[in-house]
Image (cartoon, rainbow, N blue to C red; front, side):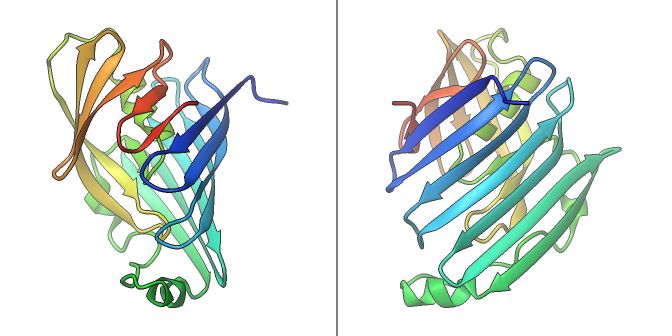
Amino acid sequence: MPLPTALFWERLDLPGAEHVLLADRTGLYAHGTALAAGPVPYACHYELQTGPDWVTTRFDVRAEGAGWARGVRLELAAGRWRITASEQGDLDKALVAAGHARAGLPGSEDPDLLYGAFDVDLGGSPLTNTLPVRRLGLLDAEVGVAHRISVAWVLVPSLEVVQADQIYTPLGDNRVSFANETFSADMRIDDQGFVVDYPGLARQP
């Protein structure tokens, strides 16, 4: 059955874009593709499912480029993450040839480090910022009150999965502040909680 909503973002930090089809009446189901020119050119295809409470239940990601492909699946049940990963070809060879450091392995060696994380965050993707916005009800939350969360951060293109601390703070007027240890930005979001403009990362045209 065709999905009712389509969103498109253009990257601001490098040549790239993201297109997603989704339904969000009872939680979120989405599948999309992100394209980027760096650190090496890649295409990243994903499928995301949450429960009615907007807690992530499943996230499938596949990234591919010249001479390599990687995949990872994250599943959350009873508060614990199960992660499976696959790899073909040699991403490190492509990265080194482009003058970059080698990548970490796809997936996670210790998924228990993600205990307490209810959201996934796909690197470079504004879609996944919607997850905590909707799960925490930040569109209607008290302005200026910070919400510190733990997320399963999926790095791209390596698909390494790491725990990350993030802070979301509603600012009013459909704006939400995002911050981590090294970066902060005030995002503009629509009435459904999807990112319209993420300074320094991406925006809808």
